[in-house]
Image (cartoon, rainbow, N blue to C red; front, side, top):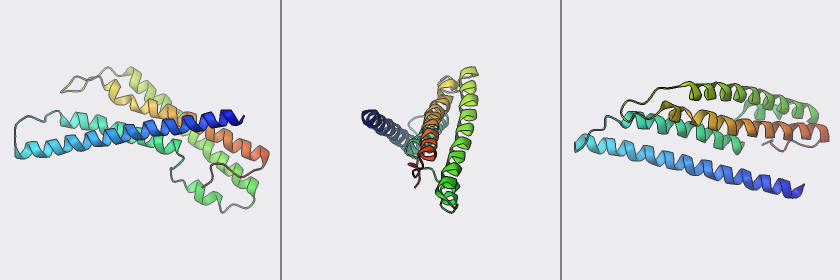
Length: 172
């Protein structure tokens, strides 16, 4: 059992590292494109008519992959974290945290389903580069799938804490 938990912890760290690198690369690309756009305004050597659609793609991906990274790290702020500390009794707090995780799972499942439908059903292309918009939208179901898996993991950990009667491994 310890070997499995160790492997899962290494997988968590690896996924988090990949998501962090992706977010840093996306942010660097956005910064470079915005800087280039400013420079081209003063020294008009080329047209930047395409910059807004590329920026839109990068920004969307940064937001969703960043949200997935924070979800993996369990770093989102939650009113549930603040409120659960004020509930009487350990078991009550554990059940409350389980209900919060269940609500999160439902939200992410709905988000994943509709973002996947959007990605698979779109046939549009971007204006300047004719990039399929499905590529633009793909960050949503990918990050949604990651968050869905981690919501399930969090629910299992919370349920285990309720059954065993120990403190929540996710509590801040």
